[in-house]
Each structure stands twice: as C-alpha cells, then as structure tokens.
Length: 197
Image (cartoon, rainbow, N blue to C red; front, side, top):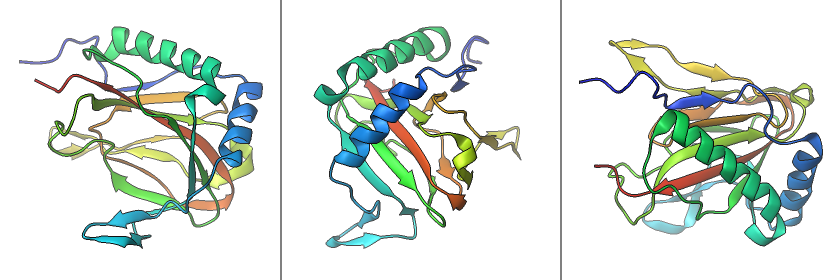
C-alpha cells in the first residue's frame, strides 16, 4: 500500500513567506532574548554539554513578542499540512527557536522528534526551517535532509532565500552543514499533533 500521490513530507515554498522587514524583526527579537551556546545536554550528566552534535547560538522568541508573525506562519503550516502532509490535530505549542551559525558552526544529523514518537501529546510532526538573513551573507550552512528510496541515498540539499520556508516531517533525519564563512540566521519551529497511528 502506498501513500496518495498528493502527499509529500518535504515542502519548500517557492516564494518567501515572510518579508525582509519581518525577518529583520525576528532577528532583532532573537538577539534580544537570552542566548545559549547551542550545545546539547549529555545524557546522565545534567551539567555537561556535548558540542560534537551542535555548535551555534540559540534563543527562543516568546509568542507575545511576535504574535502577528507567529499567526502568519501558523496559517502557512495549516495550508501546507492540508495540501501536502495530511496530519491530524496540528497545533503550535512551542516557541520558535532563533539560531545563529558562525564560521565552523553546524548541527549534525538528527531528528526533531523522539524515536518512539509518543512521549506526550502533541507529538512533533512538522518542522519548519526559515532563513532570516540574505544568503549572500554566508557560505555553507545548507540544510540537508537524508532520504532513502529503493536502497539508494538521495539526500536533498536546500539553500534557501531570505524569508523562504522549508516544511518537512519531523521524523526526517537532517542536518545543517558547517558554515564556511559569514553568519547564518534562521528560525526553526515545530508543530505537533495527535500521536501517529
């Protein structure tokens, strides 16, 4: 049995979904919030971070500080979900993560949801990566999504425009390739729904 041919688990919107002004506002808000160094907590060691998986600066933008932009993005997610994903009970419960990647920064292969996909509803189902600055301001830092089809690897590599969004199923393994030069600024969001059946 196959999924219907209208379904797609990777959707790049061809045109930007945010204006340059909205992107600049999110950069301003992200930089104004407390930033962490992006290292991941080491299992079993609450005070130790792992920098072999991710190196970047991250902060979270409160809903009330960007309510109109969050509303616009939610509308896009609902449209994409209805037309391409078909997931049930989708909601926005997590604030957007503002990320800055400088020279040498990266995020290695990972998924945006837990492996069992049922820790607590809502389960992350759709991830969003949105580029906030002009891609001419950095080199490298492409978003790469692992894909395996008929025992062949056909990874998808995306270099986005400012304000352009990539929606993908949160169970896709993906990474941010190392930054060669400059500074990449992005917004990452997750949308959850009822557990997969």
